Image 1 (cartoon, rainbow, N blue to C red):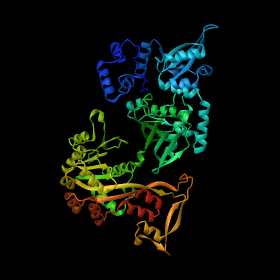
Image 2 (cartoon, rainbow, N blue to C red):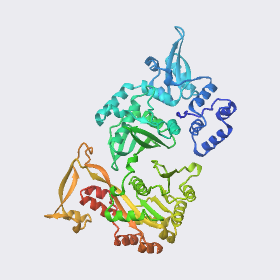
Image 3 (cartoon, rainbow, N blue to C red):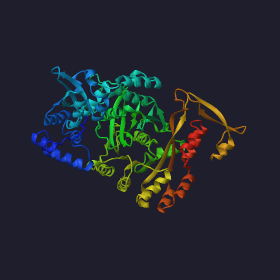
Length: 597
């Protein structure tokens, strides 16, 4: 579907826009009522809502608007090359401010010439008067989509400087021109062919420098194995940062003047409303680089200096990881393997956003995903489809919440249920009900450590006897950066220094009062950071009979933690110490990730 028109135009028209479309047969009355109801609840422009709901396509809507305003509707891509002398008749600042562009100049006589201007808002008549006074020409307006006009603005204004910026970023990043070409799944094709066909959106010769800049940012992030791309606007500059191995890293960014063009391009790729700049928007981009498919989860947030865009890079290969390769300590892995194969009960994964909870969950489900097992998941969002697993996408607008999905699962004869996140009392109550009626349930909570999940469930209102009967295991996890293998070096530190950090003397391999650790010097492979990749820290709490007794007594979290340690639970700090002494990570990473201990 094409991009939504920028305004629900009804000013100066004899009837409201929606009513006029119903009267003309373009729109059904029930569709209008549903769109207006959505507008009352969520805001937004009527035209955009009609497009997003699929009641109209862009050509129909803009053609109807043009007819009502008495002007022509044109598609600029099919209009042909515009003479640069025509474009330069109107200053760039006015064109960008009012989203218009001159497209033709017709000389009728020696004293009379007409300038045709493509606009996205035909009722902005005051700007036509200004242009007429400025140019001394008669003005004729035609209607075009905002996305078409933005594309032309970037093509004809400052195109040389945009190319210079692109060249500068390519040289600075060491990327090649091939990185500016991306194959993107078009939404219409995805809907029609279930995402199997990959097409290139840069068609019709519209491969402008701005499009190439966006492609370069995305491809560079994927090449650097970034998990997130941040495009942020400040008063005098545009900032691009990649989150690589959990830490944000500043990248070479285009000048501030490209901000609106970059954001609009990303919105087009994610099928978002490019005209909506006051409300947050979320979307999704699917693309292919070197025959490998990726998905980007896009979030646009209005800020004081302009919209901030964050794109989460979703790589399905990250989810296809064997549990043994995640970094579990041997004794912890034995507990995990025991309880993920339990016949019923609840297994919880806890940790902050970006700590790898999804990877752990999908790795566990991958072990269990067999033809004889019925697995259902309810997620927000469903990041990747997995063959053999029934995945449900949360949609709160139609009442499909985590709790509603769980209720339906119980009537679908599942063996294993995965709930993307437990957010409220209703969801956790249904999850416990499922666990106590013969289902194995996996889910996530946001807590600082494994014992904290028990306290959190109590604060949410779960009765202790229900919790103690249903809960099998809680896994808290974090990720630490690994020392780069290409620039790794050994160095010695004093044993007393490590003992002050809480490391027991018996854990140290001491030679002449010194301990050998590892660090990275910094090289091209790790972009000078000394780190490449991440390793997992896992605190696995087994809910044994003594822990159940403390849950029933509503014991304080410190007492539960003490009992867990007595029965062999390795804390996050203890796991980090093992990684440190094994040369996997550094002292700085251990302190950064497990500072609370």
